[in-house]
Length: 115
Image (cartoon, rainbow, N blue to C red; front, side, top):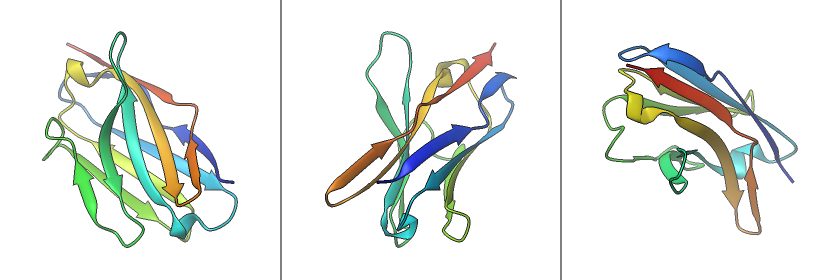
């Protein structure tokens, strides 16, 4: 079982940047695919970005060119660098780690972008 803890959320003005971090405890972090999801009020949770265990990445169209996902297997961490933030990026951001037989989520961190 992998425990996930997000940090780095907060309030930022439109056009600003934030870096989210997700720390994993437990074993076999490097064997997990990792992802960032978000859920805005009244909306369904959606994929923002994912990074496979071998490093390939996928992004939602709405964040391409603005957000970058990365991972540091030595530190058991996955990051989401968010630049050029927009008010529509406001949401709770969740970290997810999965591999066959397991699927783990963090508690979420709030990101609020003011106009």
